[in-house]
Image (cartoon, rainbow over all chains, first blue to last red; front, side, top):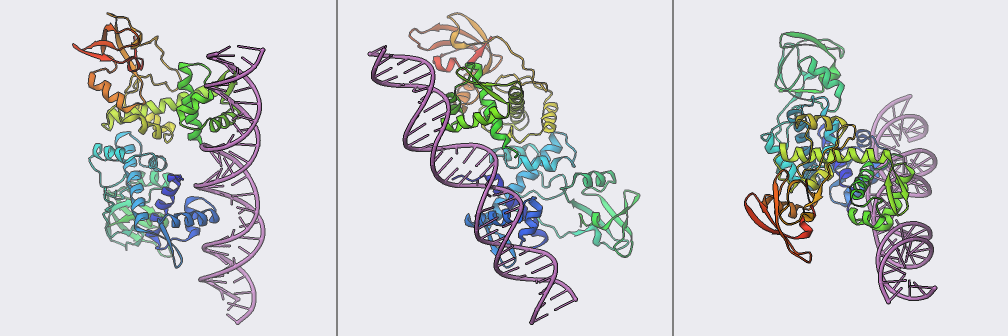
Length: 216
Length: 216
DNA sequence: CATTAAAGTTAGGTATACCTAATAAAAAAT
DNA sequence: ATTTTTTATTAGGTATACCTAACTTTAATG
């Protein structure tokens, strides 16, 4: 009778993340993100619907309030795990995502509380994403991708896409980490690179990469 | 093709523990410990046999070298997790077993290393059981249950059965924790209680409980 | 508007790990 | 030595979560 909660959690977490870029989440997008076949996802979505965690809207899947709440719990556990890994266990920020993907399903509410307390209730994960609080409240700021800044505009890095270790390593090597100020010196035309200035140094940054960095 | 490694790990861990009290482990004992039906265990044991982790001897199951090695890895992760929970995250020793049972399957070799390092390579779990080292070497001491001490004999508590939170809480309240010296004042006949002296205080301790405490 | 392409779902099938009920084998007790 | 009891295994069945291949629906385009 008891479901494999970690699969459910994985789906809800993915849906939550994907809906932020595009509201109702398509089966195919979800399948791609979860690295599963479309029919598998189609089937599982039906099950989640039956459990009242998700519903089908026009062109895709949406979370119900209950689904959203569970998703945020998982995200809280994920991001707290990441902070545990970096701040206490000495991991680098590029090493923690996959590790946290496993941990997030093995953490009880009690452990969640202990981690949060030991870390001093951190507000964000190591990549700058906000950690939902116990009640699922999530601090949201109006941010834009670095790739949308115009020449001579400045921004403060708030967060960075966290799922690609190689990119994270690269960004850290350039000093492109949260709370750092970046200035866009030039924007090359036809989707070309941005020339950015970080802590006195200049780098050419591809648009694709720059779009993964959110600034305020 | 890929098995649910956490189920395999759980079985091997149980077999490893049970074989210490009674060498070839019986299906029924294993089923009882894992809280599963005998046929389920019977079937799974066959699968583990097929994977070369286990073999059937006269009256029960034994671990192969590979199985033993994997079991010790799981036990290492379990006990390191327990130390993480108590020493870093502020849990009490009676709260960590179940938590660690979940964590042990979600910990990568890298995380294992980071935990061990952050804790200063602890030799034992919070209940006094040795933590196997990276190569699977396990410090073994000749110990006996407190229940086997005769009147006026003394012992130093080395470890305590860790799976029952209530008992752990009770023992801690009496000061019956690792490294503490206990003196048996009297042993009541017909399987009656032991009167023990711990840090100046005297307690009557049931035989059953005393048998869960190992001393040297 | 008809065709092609993309997206989604059914249909049918697999593996894992569990279950109960029934049976077989081994051990203990009379 | 036979019966009883315990222990182990087969047989048959369930649920979960995945798959591929085929089909259907929806959208995009000539």
